[in-house]
Length: 305
Length: 305
Image 1 (cartoon, each protein chain N blue to C red):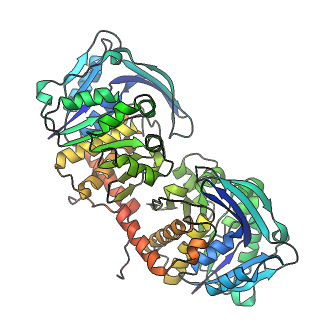
Image 2 (image 1 turned 45 degrees about the vertical axis):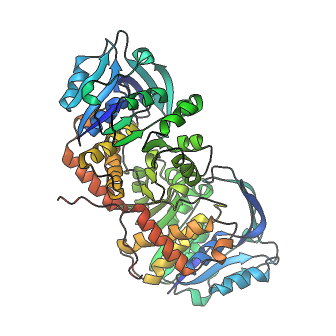
Image 3 (image 1 turned 135 degrees about the horizontal axis):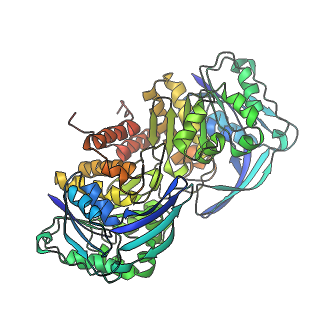
């Protein structure tokens, strides 16, 4: 059992109302891999620059993340700088330096090509499709995207979506992609583009999942201190895919549990800067939080028929 | 079993992206009473002007709402005019005419003074307390309020809260009342003001309830057409209190079910203008929607200990 992920490995500089962090470990591939590594083996496809410290590689290896697909290219590592105001749902990007990511053409090592579970993190939809074509017989493919690609590469994105089983995006992106303000109608429009399942990320309001025949709604875990929301979405995706890959069960019941595991993982990530909370996380804490999600949402059904 | 409610009976003029309605039946007391009437008897305390049509009174009587406490005063009925943009979570008030409501001093008919379940809808907190003092031995008191009173009559409001078991307000009001951006911390601050339970209304994101020892989160029902959100909060409160009054059970399990019934009622109200959807609603539809909330939220727990 393993999950293949293609995404970014980056340096993040983040300011929140509660503090700031400079040039800390970040990137969609990093958050996803670390989160998924609590459940399954991870094959990471990404690129870093010559300035990327051995210490971060060591950390990923310590999580049993396979780095055969992590290329070191001449130049600097991808950098992102952002700020959050009191509304922690929205990141304001201050600076993006693509650096080595600009000319990134992911090439899968032979050992990755039999991957069954594939996550295409938020990168150029053409690259997403390019990666997917290198995988022989994927059993489940999920992807993320963002407003930038919906606006700028809509056609390529729609083409990629034709090959994807799960799309995981935030609420504003759902409305933008479907060109429809009502979420239920927008979800239906997106399911018609290819994905059989749409997972809508709503920040502190949790997650809602749409399939052709069902809707599942899960809250976010109510936290007293949300320190830094960076990486929450990719951490969610890592827990979600990691759990599914570990069970090899794609029933709706299993997918619902995967959403709760993903939500639990995201709730840890935001408790500290960078991957600091995940670095000191133990599996029993994850199970404990899963149980708290159960307590948070359960109510008795009607007894009468 | 019955619920006493003090609130407004009004004419609303509403514009949404989907249409408009002029001088239709509205008001917190009206929405609450109608919603609660599906579960229990309702004693309504309110005031209308001489322009209030018999047809609306007939409707309330047809729902078995007791109108002994509904006064007709010289002058015009309270009027509210508002508009919603595509973000249906936020009402923009265009005009408010208090009219007969301006000099409203609620006086409870003798038959109301033994009420056990009391809902103080969003009116001047001094009037809320004044009504409450006229009730001999209330078993459960809930109240609503709004930014206007939090800003303008904070002291009176805090005094009223000292006599209230349940506070039902929206998310922005929670943060404003507690002067704290984090919802969990804000909830704790509000529970320290008196209410044992805080029910936070989050519009299309549902409801989250805080007590000293637990948190319960319920989604809103995902609707394909939200026509007019006016009255959703009061309809929620009506279903919530109506159900609790009908069961006379204030256990946490019962309160959680009441939140789901309230959410179900609110999901019907927003499907049409004014009380039009509630007017043609049948109880089996409510039970059916309750069951759909169960399907919407359920997931399997962990099997291993």
